[in-house]
Image (tube, rainbow, N blue to C red; front, top):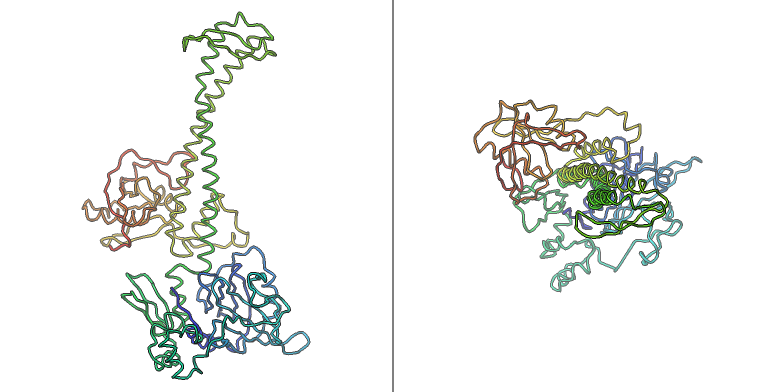
Length: 543
């Protein structure tokens, strides 16, 4: 978790102020419905009102714009803040609210002040623009009176700080009063800006003063190399085994967000891809279910052929206008009644039954072929979902986005983006026993590796019956030693849809034994011969 209480934000504010004060806003972008960025030359100040991670920080990476249109809030921000200078950054007491003071020369040559409030309050986080008189000009998120009954948040209303209950400023509290609150365990209810984790490290008035006066101390704590806690105060989580210190909050938070794949662009693109693939999968499953119903119905084509044979045996007794005829069913050894079309002559009725049988037989063959194709499609979509889940960075997701666009699962991107020349790798690599092993990070790369990159004698690895990466070991690098084969198999298991701890079978064979059926989806292969090795999916790769 990224820990930010009121005291933490007071230290973050000082860092932002030293970096941005007196700089002018050059560009403003809204990266999503819940985030935006202000660009001060080459420095980008990113705001996120996401309930899971409300935060503002100097962003090292360029965030993508996933909005189809410019929002009204963005247009207003651009109108009032473009070319405005950032005069000051304040914190409202020790509340989790930052106030950005901007000043701009208007078209009449008058200096006008504007304030941008950033409220860090979970799902109620918001960005609010006010004029010099603190009247609301616009806001990112609009709440109804029922949702936010403590104050009015509409354009024209005066901005009021959300206060649930009055608390004492920690800089102003007297020693005896604070120590009384400590004894009564009432610090969080009575003192402003102290989060629960911070309070656990305060055992005296001197501890409080030390935390307030300490310089910013950005750290990320790890457990088994996984980030578990990040903070700017000298506090720590309960369970950790290593820690890394950073010079600035911005450096720490950028690292944390990359490690946890929490960047706004990453989260939005991942959601977009998962949504598109799930939608396509749902549609494909529905079609598959209908085909299976059709197969059950058309499997009766033999019944209609038999009925035609029976009708042919009594055709001499049928006359035009008859609605039915009795006949002996020599297949089932019983008397039956065959319904007829009175508008057709006897031969016409016979042809109708035989045509229906033939049509159902042809339809059955086509439906079976379609069923195979759509089941392959479902398998392909499941593999895409597995690759999306395994992608740990934005670049990997963008490659999958390109694949889905080519497969027409996603709409074609705008011409502007389409014309940009992209530098893309066609595969990932892993070093095993000083040998380079190649693997696909999506189905497009799987296809390339297996059918364009690999030579006929190269070795191919893949988890049996589970979507995942194709692994290629060059002929000259392949070793028959069981330890080497097991290491490659563990990599294949790790980069599959299988869950850590699962026991899976990994198949491996020479590339010359692989085939790709005509019309099969990306990444689909068939083979008749392969060796196998059983491994347990590792939680992390340690080769």
